[in-house]
Length: 300
Image (cartoon, rainbow, N blue to C red; front, side, top):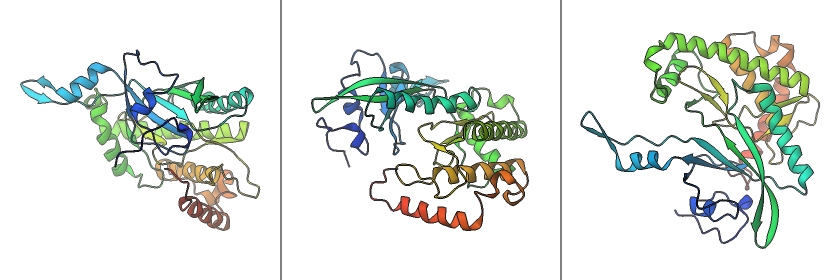
């Protein structure tokens, strides 16, 4: 079903927008020699578009001949453009939001986060000028790493193998070596996130579907940096503005990465996780997650 036209509606209120809506925005130059394509992921906090080279799109649609065979290689984005849904009463609030995003960059860059440049624009809609936060982010080629999925050696081998066509030199690195790279990457990733928790008392959203990407050579990257949560073991359990228990679910995701990939002690034996993963607390979190899933304004 085709979406209704934008009709100057506030894009922050739209479940999704199309390329024609993006190009109609006052801060997008029509003369830019690039192609935009709506990404299949559109979440609660941003609209996401691929930024493509026109020549790559032409090869995808018209095909190229390789050794006499016609091939249609999918155009790979050079960047990802995010239009954030967040509303700001003033410039100070917008700068505070950028500071929270930069906190993730400070602790996880350059190895474990997709590099991103945030910027503010004047967004004109319905005769009103608002501050809109945007981000131009590095594109990470790889496969989703779901902390709740099987993560044994066979599962990891399948993930890096599926990602192999996106990595030109994949045939030069044996799968076993790439799996070891995954373990090393996860070990460093967990250490950096724990440091962020202990020093800054914040954690990024590690639980959202598709937030963690595993590349063919075993690199682990956080690609969704829109949601950062304060970390507190106290009650009431923290929920974001949409009712999602992002802190507790992200702590749980971190524990799963450690247990399933690194084989470290269970949460019951680790003081870092123990208070968040008590059965009684997890039952409450499960109810919060269920309420979030059933929420009428959920647009995942």
